[in-house]
Length: 87
Image 1 (cartoon, rainbow, N blue to C red):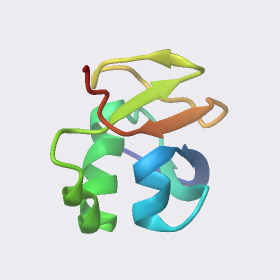
Image 2: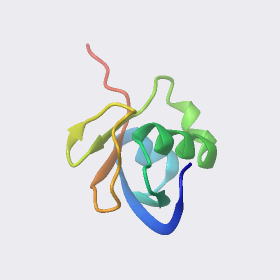
Image 3: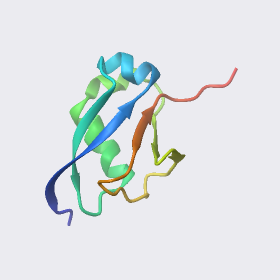
Image 4: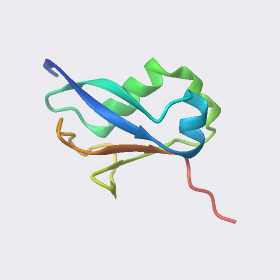
């Protein structure tokens, strides 16, 4: 069970994600044992407009790409990045 601590984490937004939401960053509630996957679900629920980004956005923690099982601490630096496309 995820326990609500009342703490917040700040997410830095970049490129098209920043443009879609119209801001550089957002604060979200942080809970003990929160994973990147949990955060992704919260983002989807709180900001359904992100579905404009056709592929899944990526999340980095402390400037490193991580998968959805990564645990998030409330002191981590979190960035939300648009899908990277090749060309």
